[in-house]
Structures are given as structure tokens and as C-alpha cells.
Amino acid sequence: MDSEILKAVSSIVQRAERMIDDAKIQSTYEEIGVIPLLNNRNNQIIYGRRGTGKTHVFKYLASELKEDNDIVVYVDCRTLSSASSFEDSCPSRKYRSHAIFRDIIGEIEDVVKQYIALNAPNNSALALDALEQMIKATSIKESKKRDTRKTEVRGRTITDNVGMKCSIPQLTLDFDSKVEEESTAQTTTSYRMEEHEKLVFPDINYKARELVQHLKVNIYVLLDEWSSIPLDVQPFLADCINKSFFAIPHFIFKIAALEYRSNFTIVMQNNLHIGFELGSDISSNLDLDDYFVFDKNPDSITAIFAGILSKHIKSELPEGYLDKIKITSTQQLINYLPVG
Image: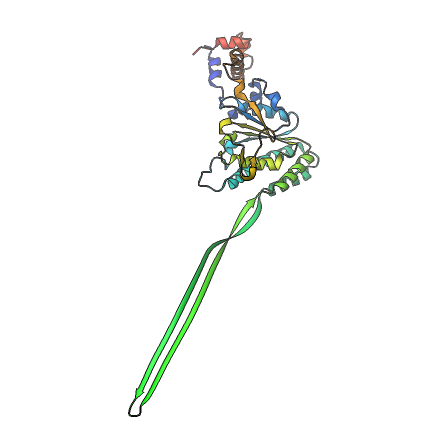
């Protein structure tokens, strides 16, 4: 086998997130009909088991959206500082979801500031002010007084003095009796002030709306590896996103997840829904597994994988190398590779 092709095969990056060059991400992407279904302003969930190419789809989608001068915030949920570090012994689900939400807001802040610095749009100062106010609304200080200790001491003292005096030769008899009683009560109460950071959703929503109005762009937030977030926290995080951004047409969320390791909504007492209502708040009808089921269409799947492999090999070869060895088609290249 040709040593250059062998080297190219061994150099193929197996995970899209490890690709550094955006041009290579685009050149190695094999379109199977997914991008047209994602390149829109609808909030969407894309499912697919590991290895089906969700990250590659998101990376390619991001490059397409940037060509329209929109802002794209790609977030790998595995890298969020709070996502995987929480265990059952940690604070409440609400607290944990708020911490992760602030991480996502921080990612949005970084990308928006980069966009403003590079493009210097009109109303930049107003946009930066709206962004700053949006960030502040995620960390409003709230103090609570908590009773930590209450002690009560009661005491009672009784003194009883009895005396008798007798003298002779003259008979004198004195009798002295004295009773003293004293009661004391002492109560001590101590308090501890606890300070929390709370989210003010109306303010976040209002300032986020102002932000996109000043910038005159769409802001796409691509949340990859959603399933790395603890299952019990996911609905509360979804609720934060829903309340903050889903009412704003120019904020669009796309979420890549494993279907059976995702929990987007829970129903509380009185039929109160926490999180996303699938179908109404966000669509969830796109599953990459449907495009890679061999039994349904073996010829199509074979052609797709041949195209993917061919593009990855070409991206690792010197320019024009395949023409030099007279390989001009995908099938020729696949046939050239050893079997097994």
C-alpha cells in the first residue's frame, strides 16, 4: 500500500472536537441532509448515539451561520466548570443548575465581546452595556437571616433560715424564720446571615433582547454534549434557558444530546412543568441514528461512509497527490485501501 495513503489513514482525527482547522472541518463533512433541517431560527434538539457525528454537524453548522454574519456560541457542556463535578451530596438541583447556567452565560459573553471587538458594529457601547446588565442579572446578591442556635436557661434559688434563742435565768425565747426565693431565666438566640446569588429572569430576558436589538444579529447557542450534565439537574437548567431566552426570536438554541441520557422536563405538583415542553418550546424530531441505520438502506449508508472516509483521507494527503497516482474517484480510493 502507498506509504502516503497509509500515513493519511493513520492521521485521521477520530473526534470532530479535536479538529483545529475550520477549513478541514468543512472539507471533511459529508452532507446527509441534516444541515438544511438545522439552518433555521427554530430551537431544536438533535439526538444521536456517540460517533454519529453530532459535533461535526454542529461545527459545520457554525461555519455556515457565521457566513451570514450571525454570532455563534459553541458550548461543549463537558467543559462547563460545574457540569460533572456535582454529586448527590452537593447542594440543591436549583443551585447546581444556576451555576451551570452562569457558565453558559459566560461563554455567550466572551463570544459577543469578540464579535464587537472584531466588527465594531453601530451601537457597540449600548450593546456592551446591555450585555453587562444581563450578566449582573445572573448574580443578584440575596441575604437571608437564619436562626442557628437558641438556648434557654432557667434557675431557682431558695434560702430558708430558722433560728431559736433561749436564755436563762430570765426566760427569753426568740424564734426567727426567713425564707428567700429567687428565680432567673436567660434566653440566648444567635443568627447567621447567608448570602446567595439569584437569577432575575425578567431582567436577563429584557437585557438579552436589548443586546440583539443593538447588534442587529441572531445569536445561535449550540450546546453540545448536553448529556454530560447530571440527569437531575438538566430540567432545571432547561428551565433557566427557557425563561431567559426562548421568548426572544433572535436567540436560538440547538442542543445535541443522547436521547436516553437526557431529561428536559419534569412535572411537579399541580401539573407545573419545569424545563422544556418538547414540541412546543423546542422540537426534538431530528435523530442522526435514522440516517445511519444500515438495515434500512445499506447501499445509501455504504456510500455515505465511503464519502466520509474519502474526504478524511484527502484532507490528510498533500495537495494533488491523488491525481499524481491517478486516483480520480471515491470508489477508486476505497478500492485502493486494504481490506481488514
